[in-house]
Amino acid sequence: AQTVTQSQPEMSVQEAETVTLSCTYDTSENNYYLFWYKQPPSRQMILVIRQEAYKQQNATENRFSVNFQKAAKSFSLKISDSQLGDTAMYFCAFMKPASYNNNDMRFGAGTRLTVKP
Amino acid sequence: SAVISQKPSRDICQRGTSLTIQCQVDSQVTMMFWYRQQPGQSLTLIATANQGSEATYESGFVIDKFPISRPNLTFSTLTVSNMSPEDSSIYLCSGKGNYGYTFGSGTRLTVV
Image 1 (cartoon, each protein chain N blue to C red):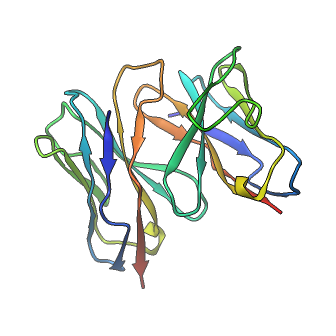
Image 2: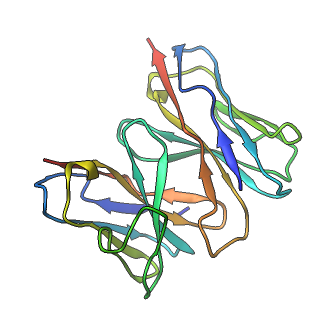
């Protein structure tokens, strides 16, 4: 079974600085998807970034980028130029592709990020 | 990706009563799920909402307590029945697409 581990329950960063959130996972699959979701106090789960395991290039979305190390089964999220609106819970998640008949999304325990002014 | 509208966003309910939460997806998704999330915790899967048939429940969750309907591909409801304070939580619905999951905005339930 796949497991997702986020070893940092809480982190903080000063506004405009850079922070990296860690995530490791365990799987025997070769093809899969990895995600970072953001959940602000509004409770909405918002997709931040997605990475396909078969792609060597790290995904980037504006100020958000990942460091995907497939061999090490590591998937960290880097937030550059942190903004107050980045304050939220961040969940790392793993999904097997093309399995339409079951729930195959596995979430980490989450990291609470606080951006300080 | 799909957009999911979930309501109500919050409610305060008396113990022993029931609350029905609705989710409407703006496009078809392959599957729909219901999650519970305790404050500061990760998501716990309650069940998979199956179109036109009984939902598939995870261990620890039963149909009598959490009846679920999914009459078509884009709509589902979760009822929290005979509520107790232990049911106070956030409830989220989710739709599965080809490349990931989309979530509703969540329902914060407080049982008093």
